[in-house]
Length: 162
Image (cartoon, rainbow, N blue to C red; front, side, top):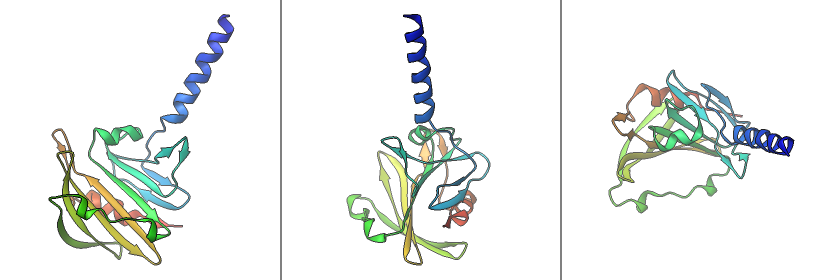
């Protein structure tokens, strides 16, 4: 009986480790590569236990994917087929266009808004036939960053499609 409990405990621990993937400072998703500056973590989201190779979370002080819920973050998606992206600007009552900017030769444009009481923005960029989309959550508690911060240029400039 003790052996069954021990085996069950071990299996549960292994499964928990598989679910709670840790963040890294650079990542190769299979679809693209990205880097994060010191103090920021890169994590791949999972759905039904399967890593989403076209997406990453970039999380300030991020150690695991769920930290995006309690830390400022970026959620980057790479659409090989841009028709799968649906613009959400009209969903937010307070959406407002932001000035376009460039990183590593890519022109980003988008809008800012408030989501769940937090300053947010979405920017997108054409890359050949593909599309990059980045959703920002700029604040959590007293911790904040801005779209004008160097970290944004570093992360977006590091994106390399495969």
